Structures are given as structure tokens and as C-alpha cells.
Image (cartoon, rainbow, N blue to C red; front, side):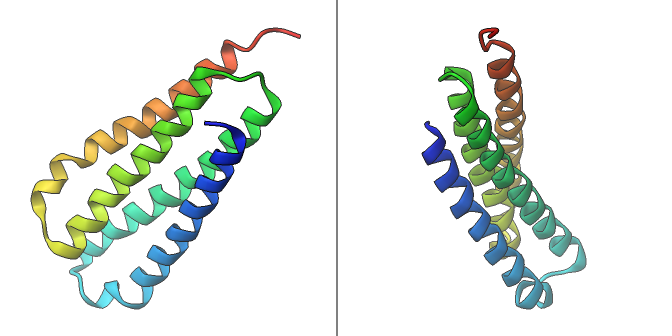
Length: 127
């Protein structure tokens, strides 16, 4: 995944996060119990943080030599957002409770994304 793909993915996921946040604040809040709405807000927050993370990974990858670790970092971030936040959005909006079992896989992908970024930076050749 090159910097351009990271910037495009991060930007589009940020736009979606804004949309889901606005949808939650103006429509979803009245449809859900307070506990369910808290879950929805968690999905939006993690979506935002990690979409910003993708933009940061794009900036870092522009400044560094190509790295499979940084490529995998971006891939894990995208997968993590889709699985973690996506499963929470779906769970809250459809009351599909079995998706709660999938959510930790998305969280694990997000953690791996940050770890892979650190490894990618550590493995950069010294100048």
C-alpha cells in the first residue's frame, strides 16, 4: 500500500466517520437505548482515531523507504476499522448480537496495525 492509497483510504474513511457521527447525533440517538448508543459512539470514536492513523501512516510512509511492515500497518488499520467499527455499527442498528463476537478481531487488527507501524519504523535503515 503506497502513500497515495493510504491518503485516499484515510480521507474516505474520515468522511464516513463524519457521516456516521452526524447520523448518530441526529437520527440514531433517538432510536437506541443509552447503552446501545454508547456502543455506537465507541464505533464512531475508534473509526475517527484510526482513519486519522491511516493519514499518519501515509505521511510516515512518504518519508521512509518502502516497508512491508508499514504496508501491513495500513492494511490492518483498514481491516480493523471495517471489522471493529463496522460490527459495532451493525450490532447497534440491527440488534444482531452475534456480531459482538467478531468485534475483538477488529480490535486485534487495529493493535497489529500500530505494532506493525512501530516495527516498520524501527527497521528503517540508518541514514
